[in-house]
Length: 293
Image (cartoon, rainbow, N blue to C red):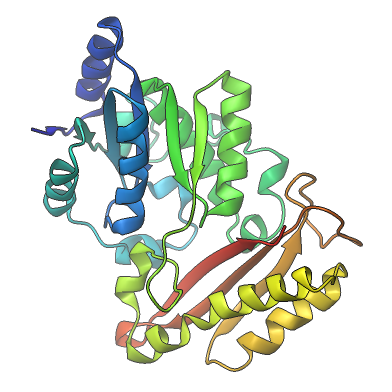
């Protein structure tokens, strides 16, 4: 049976008792609206740890668009039922006040309490979503304080976020960050909780993002190393669908930079962010990436 706690403090006490008993803990942080991608993370964690903990918390610190926060799907009971079927040991949620007791001022976390997300937050998502990564780093740091896991599991779909979390873990001295491959629909669309918000046109257009990434990889495998030409290749594919492209870029994952590098050699990753049409006239922001080398 999966235990469910509604406060971080209850979760902290349970995790401490498990660690005191000598059991290893794997941790999967989520914002809920769970899909097969999240469950793949839990499956990996279950294979590598004696206990697996999942958090479900729609973190307001990482939303720079209040409307996006309001629209984010929430169903804790349904998510907990999925995790119980998987065999997860414990799932917990909480409120911002519960995670930062006595620290909020008029319901908000003071500026000085936010963590610096580091250089991996520069450019791309960091530029299009100001403040996003400091919100991610701040809540993930607190989640690690609550659970104190040996390993924490994140999906590659949020590539830049993984870099930020890895740097956070290095500064803290743990946990070990395990980055798991992106899980996709049959047509190539990366699984995301936001996919539920797409309308028919948006859902039909969304797989073009993955096709553009594949075009970059095909060019890379053909010997192309010029970043501008790789980006042009993605742009041509993206132009075939009704998508609002924010960026289609390449970076050296071992030497992250805010701007496009002048040259790529042995290592490269292609990254795309684009908006697709959603229900009731909304715009759904989708991101994806593909390691080229």
